[in-house]
Length: 598
Ligand code: ATP
Ligand code: MG
Ligand code: MG
Image (cartoon, rainbow, N blue to C red; front, side, top):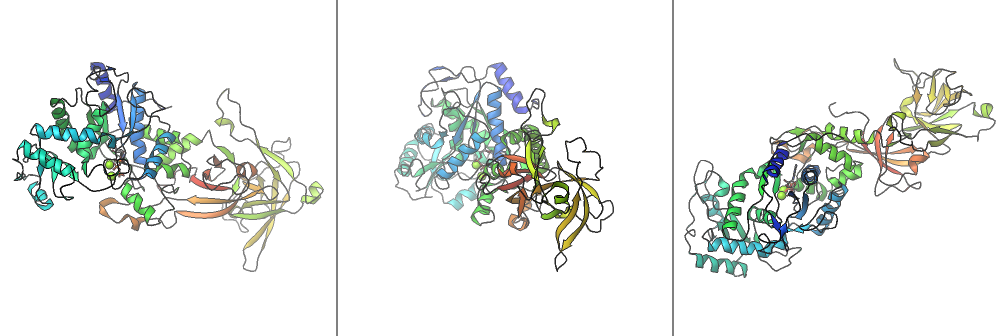
């Protein structure tokens, strides 16, 4: 395992633990109970982090980074991490997404907790459970003179916000009295104003150099049915207002997010201070920290754009094995271990950069190298006939069992029992790769050509004699003679030197399989850079389906079982379409070596 490298988040947490910044926290009751901060037992969790997805799409590899950071740090420092659905936006959310997010987090190997509970059994939190509290918080801000109902038109509001280097202009509604604001805000809540007719704004500073502090909107009117609260509300809190409150109610200590929220941090702190002054929350407040989001070459990490690929039928769904969603990576054959290793390896930084896709593939190879059983598959089959078979072994129908280890010796740790050997049959006819025969060999070619001697891996040494062709000149059969007494693992195995060993599958026991050869979904390293239309960068050859032959140990795989197809790379039995024995279907995860730079 990689040793943990320190990073700025670990330093912040260690410093807080040393100083006891959060040692005075108590918990009692449930979040949303206004008094729960002030009473109760000391919080047994040393730190609390959270992963707060909006349930408006499937999670992608960038979210996997965030999940590993948040759940990983909590685990490492004796804390817990909350899974929270940030479902304050009524329109775009769906329970399909909720379920897919739960699946993804669990699959990555993490458990969440709630206040007062150990990880493992808790339900996720839902931000919409705090709507009542958020509403109270909004009224408290109004009462303290920190918020007002603005009824400027959207255009005026935008124009009056100013710009960088240009201060904003106060709204004519900014000087309303508390009583007037309270009455108007209640009318908003009670459905007496049309959608968009008014917003509640925090009253901070229209001249602030940080535009996010120029009286940001905190509540808007939106008549929409919420997937959780139904039609109870026609006003909804804005994300910037809701998020800090969610953190505070759940007694989060370290609220870790991506860099684009850096400019929101002053408002986060402002809101915490005001709500503590009002007595709605108690110190110590959570603090926000930002890290650089994951940018991965050849990959798009925007839910909106991924949704477009799904909706326009460019891929078969959110879990298409070419998708960078966690569901897609899983179906492609990535393992939770490989994604956690990836998150560790790329680390946490404060400056944006691009990670090369090969780093992700390298982590997968590293994880599967000693785990994935080996097997032989022929992806572009042509028949090899051993013309002297009956002469050598008595009958054309004779077959003989060959065995090979499921894992190479180097993959077996000391004291570990190796898995059972694979067994497959050699007979008069076997499938070989079309590219393993050349009637006129190019220079340096060591595989089958007339008079050359090669080994059928794990079987016999053979001598090539020629081939048969159809009218169009295509090779229909390759011919060779078996050399008896040379079988792998027998005393005579080395009696005849072979120039090469080639992979093969017996006609007698080989099973036809569908093999999906996936390649990168985008042909360009930065498919959506500089506002370009990412659909133009789609790789037309991102999927090639072939009919292959596989040895029996592969045909009998369980769905989701991973293998190394010798010489071709890592493959997985498709989670959904593979049927053991009857209908084998494999996805290529990645080749044996890095080919991305080429
Ligand atoms: P998208 O832009 O793809 O819609 P999002 O940030 O809107 O993503 P959320 O559901 O709000 O999606 O994200 C949940 C968490 O995941 C947030 O804390 C967010 O910062 C983090 N996250 C999203 N994308 C990335 C990324 N590429 N790298 C690291 N963390 C990410
Ligand atoms: Mg978001
Ligand atoms: Mg987004």
